[in-house]
Length: 546
Ligand code: GLC
Picture 1: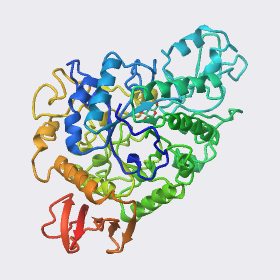
Picture 2 (picture 1 turned 135 degrees about the horizontal axis):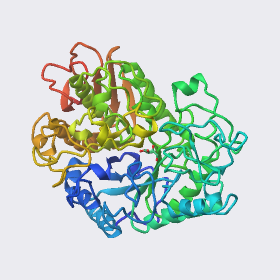
Picture 3 (picture 1 turned 135 degrees about the vertical axis):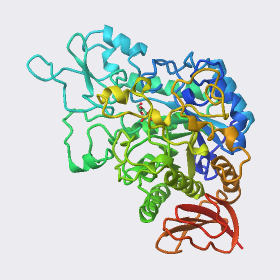
């Protein structure tokens, strides 16, 4: 394994992740090497040279474990193997080794809040009696009402409906997500010890980091009180003082995992998927907890200069307060792609799950213009940036997937009120034609729109001004001008302009106004549009002053 040396200091200020660019791979939809219509590990391996050329430092691979795939793999049946549809453990080891040879680190996704209902532990729990050791690994409770036929409390699943399901003998179990994703009981030492071991299993296989799913959800109020539906909660699922989100007890778990990582003696990291408010975020980033936690506050901020400045200040302040760096992301497998989000003409609250939004009026050209500008802004900020596969192609959300192909449990769990997250999970187009635009040899598991041919990697490679070439130029320039140090200074270039200078002297300017503005004297390193006559509205440029 060519990881960092064993005497590595885990809080070293030069650690790669402090400014790394991480590319998120959703395995089902990245590349299908075995021609079964679903992406796989070999597909990822075959495309590593593409990722190296793009200029990323690491990949984050979404869950690849054996799973019934009821929630795209976030329903894990075995944490120590690979889903046969994606490949084998040996394939995963080859992927890690090849990635390392190309200088790319590998982060994997761990799902500790819940298992699949097909995990042997849950099968054993169902077969065992109430009060048994098997049931104590999960959260089983008696119901309310005369016959216990009402759920133990009013908690709702993130995907819709009650968070409790009744089993044959009358007890209920908790599932904050789909009913096939029973929540583990993190008060149980057996559960904690099992995850220490899972971390070690993958560390021994050379992975460089872990993205921790729902890292703010493991600890529940032991009294299991009803959730009070407050204004704050309706406004944002990141509300404070909640009986199962962001409770103090999670920090003890974070510290335990951090010790396991630090004991490995290498430069491994973990990044939290914590949907918590900006005030509490720094708590996750303390030096003995997570290395990184996504700034979802930035992701959900609507288009606009002042809102963007405030969100950036909050994220930088939160990270710096505890000696960390911010972790930016604009898209992932759970949210509407940002090229579409920024083209929606109606105000949408992105602070409550699910983040897929209404199919309201949309201007796709505006969305792409703003999306590209936002991407350049993000890649110029201090800290690390996570890119979601396909954003480098400017892929839009796919709106019109027919109901019969929808796969996200949100569709059924919301009783067909929410289409769910499939629109950002459509397989990537690699070539301009073929049965799945080069994704593989078969029909892909979700249909791609015809427009994907012109957005494919082949169609954009070498084309000046294409989104792909913009990302390549930006990532190369970022390595030269944006990561030397973490310093950052706002510049005042007018009421409608967001501008800042980085330590190297490079300036990033985003024009939120309608009128074209002059750029400072100097060399334009990269821009989101043609800047021959100045910087138009909804565009961004990086300038190295003369
Ligand atoms: C996380 C994942 C999401 C999944 C959920 C339940 O939010 O990103 O895809 O559905 O957790 O595991």
